[in-house]
Amino acid sequence: MSLAVASEDVPQAAAALDANWRSQLTEEEQRSADIVLDFEADEMTCPACLTTFATGPEECPECGLFLGN
Image 1 (tube, one colour):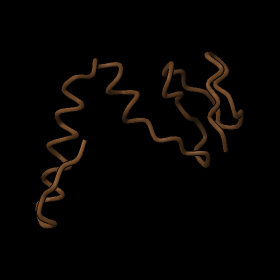
Image 2: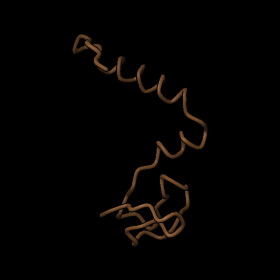
Image 3: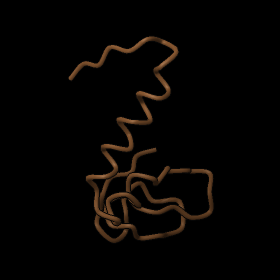
Image 4: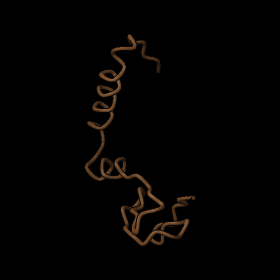
């Protein structure tokens, strides 16, 4: 997919594409999409299963998703 817009319209175009994409997600998928992995925080949440755990392991202790670091 390509979208050509004037440079001054890029922020509005990006916001419209994001809103369209998010409107197709379930509530749980939207929560997952908002997760930012912060390896410096005390806790992190797995974007796959939404389990919260103490930062440290490279894999989610619940579902095994490789989080990398």
